[in-house]
Amino acid sequence: MLGNLTLAIAIVIITMQFYLRQLGEEITKIPVKYWWLGWLGGILVGAIAIGSVIKTETGWGWTWRGRQLEG
Image (cartoon, rainbow, N blue to C red; front, side, top):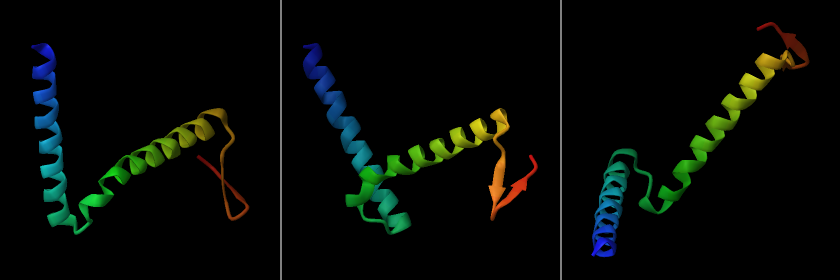
């Protein structure tokens, strides 16, 4: 019984997610077939943020075109 309920909830959630992706396609003009790439941007931003914290907190600092930047 619980398995059937879980399956039904999963199907509803997946259907809602797909509907939201279609709505997003109408707004952004990015095809639904690229929905799976969305998480990549989040990982990239997270990696940049972690790198920024590490460089700032450890004192490694930042360089731009060979010059040291002050934080």
